[in-house]
Each structure stands twice: as structure tokens, then as C-alpha cells.
Length: 277
Image (cartoon, rainbow, N blue to C red):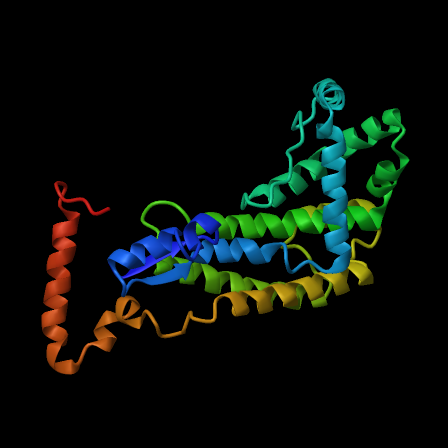
């Protein structure tokens, strides 16, 4: 055993009885690292500019009001049934769940008309004012789109047969997307954000991204990219060349033998009675 990868929970990292301490007692040379997926999830909510962070806090207030009382929860559920809504309830926001923020913002966006009617009946003018504010809705919609992209990245880095090379591929592809999105947003093109585009079609006759939204989105994408680079400084460009381009990394005198071995391994793997986990 050469490495131990965990999240940042006290049970894992506690200096006296944490899991990593117990492992190092048995194998002192084991290297302990912080899970790359967990790091990616942690930085997502830390990069929001103040206007987006404020909207996210207000979303949580809305959810807590609807879900915080049994009566409100049942009334809203019945309203959603009567209006044939896509969803029939809201989800609580949970910081420790990676996909929580994306799911919560998505449901608020999908149920915004039902929420307007509910708050109108309840007399909650503050919540109603948020949902009727075009700038607030645009910020909400961007949050839905960007967290959907982050959730997709999270899911690509999980599951069976996933390895560090696949993670690096997903990471670099997302970094390229961020740069491409910045270029497009600078030209007020948000076609890559599907829900924000649909809202612009409704709210703006010119279907153009307002200046305030352009500035805020550019700021967030820039900070998000910088945070990625800060969280993952160890991912070098040529770190996995031996795996990606093996023949080019093998000395000339051994390339023929290397190709023979590679062919034999490929033949074994392709046999029906041989499986690799």
C-alpha cells in the first residue's frame, strides 16, 4: 500500500485516532492525500460573487419556509399536484452532499410559477418580490446552469473503473470549457447555458445578455478557473505520457518488444473468460 485517499472529515484526519493515523501506524511510508473529487466539490460554492451568493442564500430561505412546517409543505405539495407541476416538493439544501445545490436551484427554477402563487396566497411579499424580479431570476437561472455543469463533472469523476487519468481528462476539458464560456459571455453569447437562454427569450426583447449579468458571470467564471488551478496544482501536462503515448516514451531499442507485450495483453483482455475490474 503506497497511498491513502480520504475526504476531510475529522474521523479521517484526526491527529490521534483518525483513519490516516491508524494506517500510517501500520505502514509509515503511506502517503495521505485529500480526495480530488471532494476538493472539486468544496470549491464550487466558494467562488460565487456576492450577488449570486445572496441569491443562493435567498433560495435557501424560500426552501426553509416551504419545507420548515408540515402544513406549508402539504399545502405546497397539493398546489403542485393541482397545477400538474414537474415536481411536487422542494429539496432541502445540504452542504455535505455534492449534488445538493444543483438539485435545489433546479427545483426552484422549475417550480417558480407555483411558488409565486403559493407566496401570493400566504402573503409573503418579500419572497414574491424576489421571484418577480427579472435580475433575480436571471441570477437564479445562471446558478442552475453552472451547477448543472459542475454536477456533470462530479459524476464523470465517480463510479467503477474511474482512475486519475480519466479525472485529469475531465478536469482539462472543463478548464477548456471555462475559457470558451468566458470568450462567449464577453460577446454576450450564452447559448451554452440553456436555461439562461430561455429566460432571456422571455425577459428581453433583444434576447441579449444584460451588462450586469455579463460582468457577474465573467467574474464568476474567472474566479472558478483560478480556484480550479489552486485546488489542483499537482496535475502536470506530461505526468501520464507513459500511459497515453507509451511507444513515444520507450527507448528506441525496446520499442519492438514493448509493442509485442502490448499486443499480447490486448489479446488476453479480449478473451471472453478474462475480465478486468
